[in-house]
Image 1 (cartoon, rainbow over the protein chains, first blue to last red):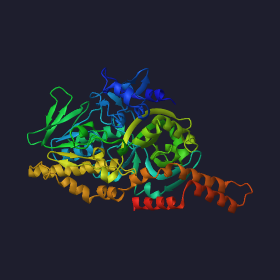
Image 2: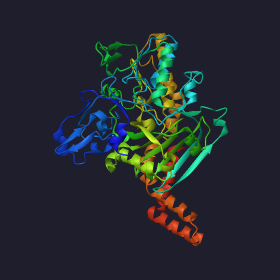
Image 3: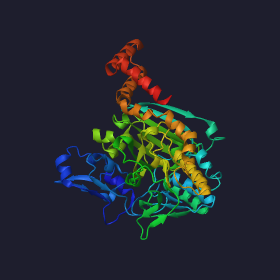
Image 4: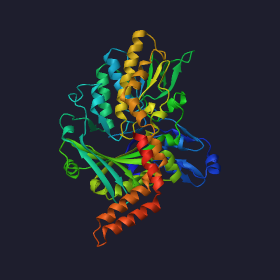
Length: 91
Length: 428
C-alpha cells in the first residue's frame, strides 16, 4: 500500500495557507547532504523536486518530526489553524 | 482555570475541577475533542475510575476488554511469542486494560467534563501564554479574534508535540533522540474474524507487543491491539534512528504487515485510517520542570511515559487528577505561585508515576545502546529455534554446536553478558 493511498483514508480539512515552511531553501540544497526530511516524514510531505524540496502540507499528520528532525532546524512549523488539518475518525 | 488540550490529562483535570465548582475552560485545537488525539489504543480502568467511578455505567466507548497480553520477538521470517491469559481479567479485574479509539473516547470523556460544568472550546489553538510584569503566567493567547483569556492557573496538557511548551521555554525543544516516531494503521475486520483469529469472546481482546527485526535494526516496537471491529497496528522507532538509517516509516509499516506472523491476522482486512505520533523516550530523566508561578504541565507534555509497560494514558489521567487537586488547594489558599501549587509535585513524587519512571530510568538508554537486540539477537534466536525444530537426521548435539558457533561469531560472550547485565540493571 502506497503512502498516497494511506493518506487518502484520512479526513483532512485543508487551509489555503501552509502551516509548514522551509525557511531557507538554499540551506537544504547546499548544506544538507542527507536531507532527512525526505525520509522521516510519515506523510511524505517533503519531496525532492528539480532544484528544491517541495512541501505537500495538505497531507501533514501533525507529528512534528520534521521540525525537530531537520538538522538545521530550517522548518517553520505551526499547528494548522484551529479546526483545520487532520481529524481522526477512530484515533 | 484554563486547560490547554482535551486529552486524558486535560479532561481528567477538567472533570475534577468542574465538579468542585471551579470555573474551568478546556481549549482544544481540533474540530472536536479527540480529532487530533491518538494512542496505541489502550486505557486503564483503575486510573479512569479515580476520575469517573461510574464510567462503565456512563456508556464509556470501550472497544474490547483485554484478557490476554502477548509479547513477540520476531526475526525476519519467524519469531517467538509468549502469551498470558487469565480469567481474572474477564471477571473481578475486568477493564484493568481495555482498548479504545481515541476519537470516540476523548469525545465521550469531554462530554462528561461538560456535564460537570466545564467549558470545552474546540477549534482554538493556544498560540502563547500571557504573563504579568513578574513573569507569572496569567492566561493564554489564542488564534481567535479577541483571543486572550485570563486564568489563575494554566494547565498545559497539549501532548508531546507541543510547540507551545518550547516557545514559552517550559520545555526545551525536543531532540530527535528524545522521541520515538510511531505510525498507526486501523484495519477493519468482521467481528467474528477477530474473535476467531485471536480466540476471544465477543467483548474480549488481546494486546500484542513486538520487538525484533521488524524495526529494521532500529530501537523500536510494534503493537497489534484488538478493537471491536478492527485491529490497531502501530510501529515506531527512535526518531534519530529513522534519520540515520534512512528508513521511511510507512514502508516499515508495510513490511510489518507482510511479516509471516502478522499477515494472517490482518488478511482480508480493510485499512481505514493512517496516523502518526510521537512517544516520549528518555523516561524519568526527560521530565521537564512541571510547575511554576501560575502553570502546571501534565501528561504527554510532561513526557510522562513508561515505555517498558506501554503505559501513558493512565499517567496522563492521574497527573491531570493531581494537577486538579493541587489547583483546588491553591484556590483555597488564593496562592497560585509555584509554592501554592506544590501539591502537584509532591503527589507525583509519592505516586506510582514517579516511582515507576525512576525504576526504569535506564531502560530507554539500554535499548538505544544495544542495537543487537533488534538485529543479531532475534536473527540468532530464530536460527536456534528453526534448526532445533527441523527434523532432518542431523544429531541434536551437532545442531547445538553449530548454533553455539553462530552465536559466538555474531556475539562475544563478554558482549552477551554485558547485554544481560545492562538489561537487568535497566529494569530491576
